[in-house]
Length: 301
Image (tube, rainbow, N blue to C red; front, side, top):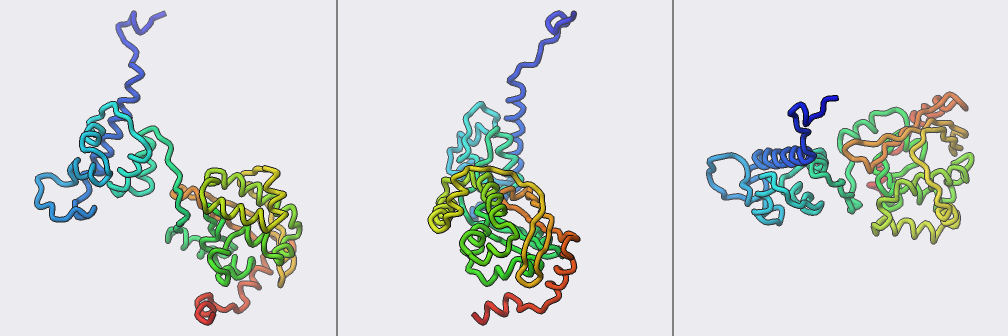
C-alpha cells in the first residue's frame, strides 16, 4: 500500500480550507469596496482619486471599526469576526440581501435574524400575487397579511376595511366570531393553524411584537390559550381547505405555501379551487360580482 509519505506527497493541511475561506472573504470585501464611490456612501468632497472605490479607512469609518482591523481582514489575517461587525460592514458596503448572506457564509457565521417588524413585499412578488386568478396572499413573520389579490378579497373578505393592526390571520380566526362560521371544521382548522404558527414563530418569541400578539391572543381567546399550551408543532403541509363561504356556500381549495429565497421569513400562500362543490364556478361568480374598489371606500370612510 502506497502512503502519501512514501510517495513523497504530503497531505494538505486542514488549515488550507480556512485560508481559502479567508481569501474568498478578503477578495469579496475588496471588490465590494472598489465598486463604490465616496458620494454613494455620503462621503462627499473626496476629490479626484488615482484608483476607484473607497479607501480601507473609509470603510472602517462607516462600519464603526478600526482601520487596522479592516486592513487585516482584507489581508487574510487570522482575526476574529463577529456578527455585529459583519452586519455593519454589510451596511457600509451597501450590500443587498444576497451579498449580505454570502458575506456571512464566507465568514462561517449564521445570518442573524432581523428583529424589526417592518416588512416589505417586493414589486415582483406584488405583480405575481395580483396576476393570479386564484386566491393568494403574503404573510409576514407575525402572520400579518402584507398583500393579497382580488380573488383572496372575494373569498376571504375585505381585508382593506380592517385597520392594519387587525390584518392578522390569527386575530381574525380567534377574535372574530364570524370566522368560526367560515370553516367547515373550525376546531380542526384552528389546531392546525396554531401548530404551524408555533413552528414559524419560534425564532421570534423574544421579540416584543411577537410576544405582544401571543399575549393578547392568550388573554382574549380561551381556545388559543388551550391550543398554544399543547405545544403542537407542524411544518408547512400542503392540503385541503374546506370553507363555508357566506354567499356561495361550501368551497374546497388546495392549499400551497411558498417560501421566497430573498425573504425566507415571508410566506406566499396560494389556494387552488378544486372541482368539489362546484368551487371553480363559485369563485368565478364571486370575481364577476361588482365590488367597490378599496381606494373608493377608503376615501369615503
